[in-house]
Image (cartoon, rainbow, N blue to C red; front, side):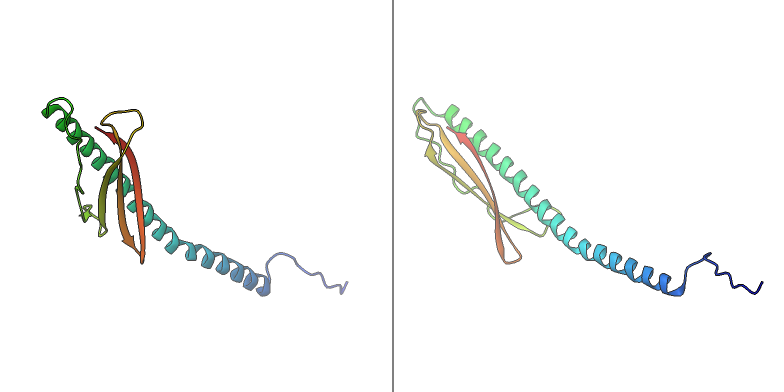
Length: 138
């Protein structure tokens, strides 16, 4: 009965080393994604802030236009919004936003109603980003 029986009860050191190498590669790939996620999250946050600024500015321009139309006699000169705000900084953000209002395009077939475009732009990473929103004013 001098037969040698091999036991398959555990892992060999080679199997453990290969497993550790595979797990370390997987962890390195996961860790490499985190900085990109953080950068992407910042860009999305800035775009959200710019959209909010554009909506608020368009609301203010529309309100000022309505007040202008109510305060002057019939057939008033059209309301001319100037560049309302420049270099706005949102609290909690280091980004400087520039807001430009352009109300040059008249809506076809409508007297004193013009398309208004609010553009919010900012510089980040050597690139200029912007968000535009279009509405109407009188």
